[in-house]
Length: 266
Image (cartoon, one colour):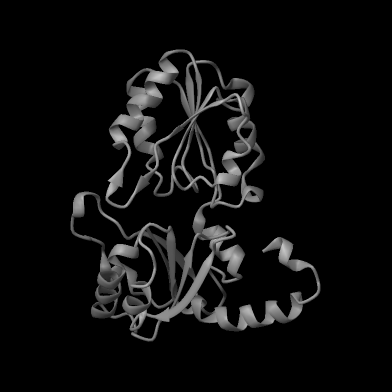
């Protein structure tokens, strides 16, 4: 499917819904959910974005909370396949981007195995949304020459078998997804493998939404700080020298934007 004119009946588009702010939904993603006969969506697709789905379009919520899954991923895949098999245009919409910790490639494999056409519509991932909202860059000359997206979660309570030695480069920014429940362990492993205890951290919960919360810490203080974050709220942890820029960026933006009407862009 090269464009939405090729969104035929009996097919599935995996549509990235972005980080939450409806203004960060791509035009192609908007057209996809407008063209779909049914939208199968995750919990992280914001209410505002779901408000853009036409009223007559069927909606199926397959969202998951920590420890409380309405539907297994296998059942979600089977539902998408069943709906498309009935001749419907299915907009399968996870938050962020379907190919960055969205399990989109697994869903596509299942759909192709069922003989169904499937394609992707990319979305702005929450790391990019958090960077734009807070002003903290993911890379910055002289501070961070690379960025690593890291999962902080393993299925069925499996051990966090990350390559810790590769994650302690002080010139790399780490972005930890889905890590609230394991962040104390993650911080401990990073320090044990050589990352400095005073490495700055910025935690951003519900990035780009009206409920956004920002908390600063270091690797040493992160376990205590994170213990006050509700586990059901999607939270990113930006770890590295760039996170240390946040206090000055926040102060400067507050001073410059005061009375200038810039809050509308935040």
